[in-house]
Structure formats: C-alpha cells, structure tokens
Length: 195
Image (cartoon, rainbow, N blue to C red; front, side, top):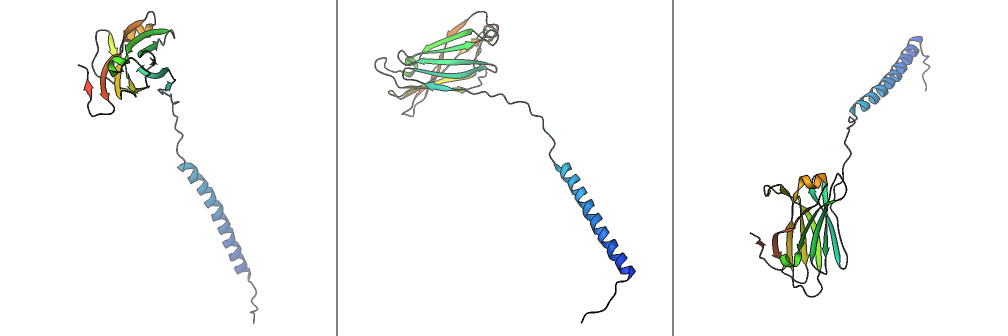
C-alpha cells in the first residue's frame, strides 16, 4: 500500500536546493580539476639542437675509408690502399675547406704483413683524448685509426700529430707521419707497444 504523502513546500524547496548544490559542486570540481591538471604539466624545456658527430667507415675490394675527429671541430678522412698498404689521413681546413694536412704510413710495417699476396684489411677509427705528447707546435689528434690484416691476424693502431694553426688557417699543408702507437696479434695473447 502506498502512502498518500504529499510533498510540502518545505521538502520541495529542500530537494531543489540540494540538487542545485550538487550541480554547483560538480561545476566547481570540474573547473578546479582542469586548473590543477594544467598546473601539473611539466614546464617547457628549451633544448639546443643536437649536433650529430659520427665516425664512419667503408670497405671496398682494394680500398678502405674511415673518418675520425682530429679535434673538436675538424675531421680527417683515413684512406687505406689494400694493394700497397699505404695509409693516408687528409685533414680539411675549416676556414678554406681545402686539404691542409696530409699524414702517411705503410701499415704493412706495423702489421708485419708480407708485402706479397692479397691482403684482407679492415679499418676503423676511435676517439682518444691524449694527455701530453705535444712536440713543438704539433699536438696529438683525437682519433686513432685501427687496421687489422686477416691473413696475418695482426692489428695495429696509428695516430698523428698536427699543427693546429696550419690546419685552422688553411694557408699551407701540414705534412706528417701516421705513427705506430701499438700492435698486437689478434690470434694470440701478446700486445706490444712501440717505444
């Protein structure tokens, strides 16, 4: 049996007020939530563009190429002739864009490889921060070039010293030697260092 209760003006007013308060609270909650979410977002970070600095290497049947950093803004290209064993490093002047340094060696001497027959060379560069080692105006380059010869199983590392002023100015050519830093047989335990 249903009760015959009639709503009074007071109960209708009370229910209407309660509904209005709930609607107001929902509206305020949504506004406060949106404001809080905006405040929690991470501040924008202004990053400088990244400068890519990468070394590369490529090998053909009779020649290998690799790049390596000479200093923080100058790169060199290493060229290995598989037929002769001659290794060169060309350094471009950042001012003129022309070759301003040429450094050479014959890797067969360092690798103790037989000059006769086909060679199985592989070459790569690495970044190295030498401390000391300056000779007059010449300072050590930041890259080392590694050459291995598969038939002999020998590996050698070469480095160079360059005249920073000649390279930067680009008004001449700094000639030098790629010096043997160390060598080791890849198929053995012994590592030797040139004195």
